[in-house]
Image (cartoon, rainbow, N blue to C red; front, side, top):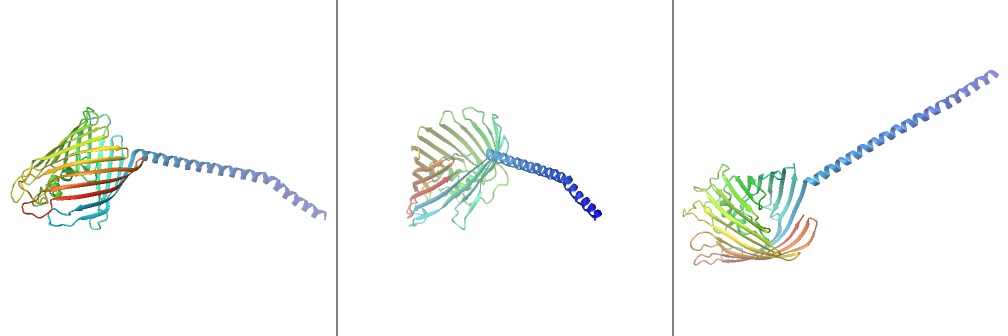
Length: 389
C-alpha cells in the first residue's frame, strides 16, 4: 500500500509540475500570437488607408483635369404654311427632343487638352435618329507661347454665327464648316489678336448651300465627283481692340466643278451694358458654274441682331436677316428676308446647372414666280425648355 501511495503521489506531483510549468509558457505564446495578430491588423489598416488615399488622389486629379458638361432640349415647333413650293400646303407642328448633348474636356497634359462632344438629334424620329460626334479635337498650346494647334472634327473657324434665339442665323445654315481639319494659330497677346490657317477635305460649302434650300442649288447635288485631296482651307483673323468689341474676318476656298468656290465674311460683336449687338455678312467671291444654264451665281447672306438683358433672368432679342441668290427674276421657294423676335427666361440657376425657357416667333418672306400660286410668307413659332449642366 505504501508503494502504491508513493506512485500516486509521484503522478500527482508530475501533473502539478507540468501544469504550473507549461501554463506560463502557453500564456506567453498566446500573448505573442495576439501581438502578432494586432500587428497584422495594423498593417492591413495601413494598406486600406493608403489605397483610400490613392483613390482620393486619383479622383482629385480627375476632377481637376476633366470637366463634364451636357444639355437636354425639349423643342416645340409650329410652321404655317409647311411649304413655299407646293400650293395650299397645310400647317405643321412637332414636339420632340431636339438635342441631347454630352461633352468632356480632358486636360491630358499641361499643354494638351481634348474636347469631345457627343450629340443626339431628332431622337423621336425612329427612322432618322442621329447620334454622332459633334466635336472631337485635340488642342496643343503652351501658356505664354503664341503658337497653337487644333486638330479634329469641329465647326472650323469660318463664321461666328452668334445667336440669342432658338433658331440659328441664316449664315450658319449656309456656311458652317463642320468637318475634321487641322488648324495652326498665332496669338501674340496683343489686342486679342488671333490669326489662324486651317486645312480640311471636301466641298462642304457648296453642299451646305444646296441643302439649306434658300435659293442657291448645285446641280447635280451632291457633287458627283468629290475631291480626294486635302486642299480646302480657311484663313481667319479676329481682334478685340477695345473692351466688349470683337471683330472677325475669314476666307474659305474649296475645289469645285471647274473653278474653285471661294467665300469671305466678317462679324462684329459689341457688348455694352445690358445690350449686345451682332452683325455678320458672308458672300461668294467665286463660284463653280451650275447646270442647266452654266452660270456662276455669287450668293450672299447677312444678319443683324440686338439682345437686351432686361433683368437678370430675362433676355429679349431681335434679328433681321436676308439672302440674295444672285439670280435674275423671282423663283418659288427662294428666301428673300426674315425677322425674328424672342425671349429667354432662366427659371433657376445654381452652380453650373441652368434651366431656361425660350420662345421665338419668326416670319420668312420668299420670292414668288410670276403666275405662281404658292405661298411666299411663312410664320413659325419655336418653344424650348433647355437644361444645361
